Image 1: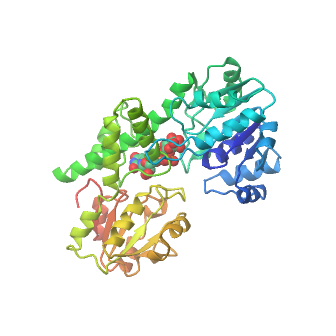
Image 2: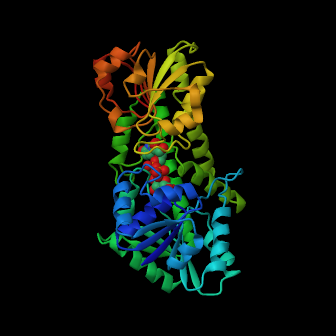
Image 3: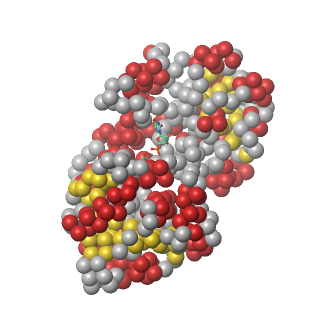
Amino acid sequence: MKIAVIGTGYVGLVTGTCLAETGNEVICVDIDEAKVAKMQQGEVPIYEPHLDVLFERNIKANRLQFTTSLDEGLAHGNIIFLALPTPEDEDGSADLSYVLNVSQEIGKKIGSYKVIVDKSTVPVGTAEKVTAVIKENAKCDFDVVSNPEFLREGFAVDDFLKPERIIIGSSSDRATALMQKLYAPFVRSGNPVIVMDEKSAELTKYAANSFLATKITFMNEIANYCEKVGADVDKVRVGMGTDSRIGKRFLFPGIGYGGSCFPKDVKALQKAGKDQGYDFKILDSVITVNKKQKTIQIPKIVSHFNNNLIGKKIAIWGLAFKPETDDIREAPSIDVMNALLDKGVSLTVFDPEAMPNIEKQFGSKLTYATSMYHALEGADALIICTEWSIFRSPSFIKVKELLKEPVIFDGRNLYQLEEMETEGFTYISIGRKE
Ligand code: UGA
């Protein structure tokens, strides 16, 4: 099939590349000329495991092309994916201006039947708005479909190629049939393509992300309570997770969720609810608790150093909002670092992928280590903010040698308490005994 993907951010790029992988001819459109030029040279603009291999293969096979011309994209594609940003407005709602501006252009430019697919995370009622905007100018038939994505950064290619489910919000049989054909190669394993109305599809995405954010936040509160009563959240987690109604995943406590999706989507659903006179009390709490959770370690650090952090040197492992990404949007590490800088601490940081992004934001306020061990040299303590695999089994002998004192504040519960005791560390984690 002939596909155009408008917007080559994270979602658009993965969508375009993976659709090319199953034999479709894909053109990706973006207004960023420099980015398009780079992609035309075969350069992947984001860090995402496995994307580079698929990218190269499909460009070589001529199934994946890039352009800055919307006209070219629209002339090529029968199915037009909108993968445009929906940033957070000042009031927390999703800003639809990119989606609606492009929709207006589509209305003016299409000359034959197209299916316009909304892949961006958009509030309930957006498909209706997009339809209305296109209709203002369109001289031909078209359908608008809501097809939210459920990709996780770091696993996006795998999630796209082997989705647990595909959601199609559509009220047109013609568009639904096309979408089912397009996705058939991805659900051969028998995973469902679930067809529903557009509004329910739009809400499914917000509800899923908000539920997951709530699940994590609930566990973070249980962890905080474990500390008060001397229970071990790791044991509680395993005990709870074996109940199949609860499930083992997304129960890992830590220093809060971040990223470009959960924080934005929870706020957007909360705001959308308020706009309709519905008060999502649970989401208010999730937002408040998560904000606090990001700096939950700070009082512990302050108390460990007897209220005197001025002149202390602390190492940080992990800056990205989660492993396998260079994304630092809403990363807990940012809140941790800002709080410590305010208290006069000097910070030496290390992350396998996110250092350039952090450097852009923090500049000379931080020292950037060349390796995880380099970060520890002469530091008074180590803080772990992201659970990258390479931090999971370090040489504790080396860590002890390099740190001034063997003190670790672990925001992601990477190590066993018994192991740390044997190794002779002061080990302060989340929801477990010190
Ligand atoms: C999330 C969803 O998982 C995807 O399904 C969705 O498509 C995507 O948002 C989106 O809306 O585009 P992502 O933001 O890549 O994906 O990250 P996750 O792996 O879901 O992690 C989100 C945050 O939760 C991270 O900060 C992570 O550290 C935290 N988390 C996750 C925990 O603190 N504990 C857990 O047990 C799991």
